[in-house]
Length: 106
Image 1 (cartoon, rainbow, N blue to C red):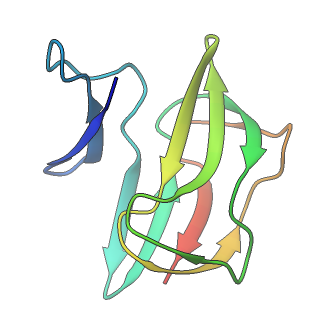
Image 2 (image 1 turned 90 degrees about the vertical axis):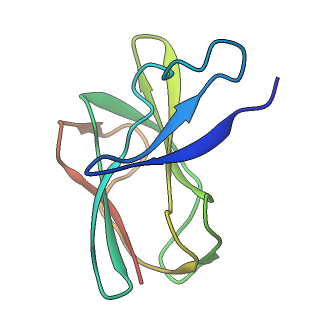
């Protein structure tokens, strides 16, 4: 099954299931962009399951930065534009709260 990304004003992107076109729980990642700097923040309380990208890595639009886990679901935190990861503020095993900084992409 494929999943598409759709832009949602004021909320970044939300993953949609093509079968029913309803949001997949916890898939929204908030971000604020100034110029070409993006702060990727946690949308909900979750555990950091895996850090995929590290400081200095080049990433593409939609690339996974970290994988969060909440309520037995894996939630990818993704970059919303191509760039370089300048900061990863979490480590595997950390617990993030809603709004916590996950990473910065420039």
